[in-house]
Image (tube, rainbow, N blue to C red; front, side, top):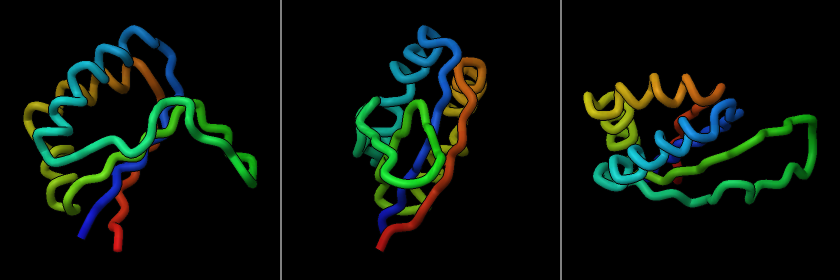
Length: 95
């Protein structure tokens, strides 16, 4: 069953966040993930949520998503991402 990583990022350091993206995109792809959205492509239709940047990444299943997130190669990038932005990340199973 497909799984989705949904992330909201409020970026404080664009240069650091760009470095994070440069390194993380190939890792995501190696774990079967692919970006479904692009930066700045969101629009709030209702409510008070005002995200700065939203990313939706599709993985083959929840196991692949969690394997990526918990992988030894990704752990240093969590610190890089957190030094560059304030984030909210959720994992959601698809149908």
